[in-house]
Image (cartoon, rainbow, N blue to C red):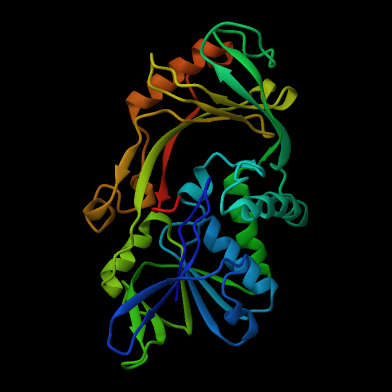
Length: 347
């Protein structure tokens, strides 16, 4: 059984979970492989259930079926790309992990996004330059920063993709290659007698999905595994507000990603991503809510992705900070939303 966080801007290494003969749970690091479990790759008949239809679950389903896995089921309780896998920023930087233990992973991931965009026909992928922006007057690289802001080139070699398109197209490709998507809520695991081998996933409906391998890729809701195997899953959710402005000509005519310095007036540190669709996506609104424990479980205010909504105070603050930078912000955002980012200790 494999546990993976559901990353957006950071990558968390998978862990191998097994039940020992003494009925204890042990946790040991396992080397990262893009296609998830090599053992599953070698066994076409092995039944695999992936819990979670976000970007990680979709990626695993895609690569497993690409490598020949014939019996892969993705179990999703809401909808594909319901949380961070559909509402994240989608910013890509190949060199920002240089000097860290994940340097090669960052670089390969950056390259792989470009390859997959071509393979899957992802229209939102494009190379863009990134600017560093200060909330004070001065010279600007982008002409549409016509308010109180100054900018300079930060990185000429970054890229972007719209997470919702990326995740849904990857999941569709996985289905085209034989994977199955089932809507349902996992309630626990079944084991083969007293052995350390998982036998299935038990649903709230009472149905059991028989399987030989389970991949837990439910983002922050992966902490529900604690209730199933009595072991800690050290992770908390970061609930963050984001804004979307639609039909913005500058998003296609002069596309620069913006990383803005701390705006102490509004307590924001905006990240601004013009997209090929003509949207401008904004996060870094400040005041993120850190969520754990009972709030993520049944009856909690963050039990389901549909419950994750924007903070009106942070919407107002971010809108005003953006308005001060550019006349594009002289109207209300078309979409206000929030998603839950998983934050494990190694993030």
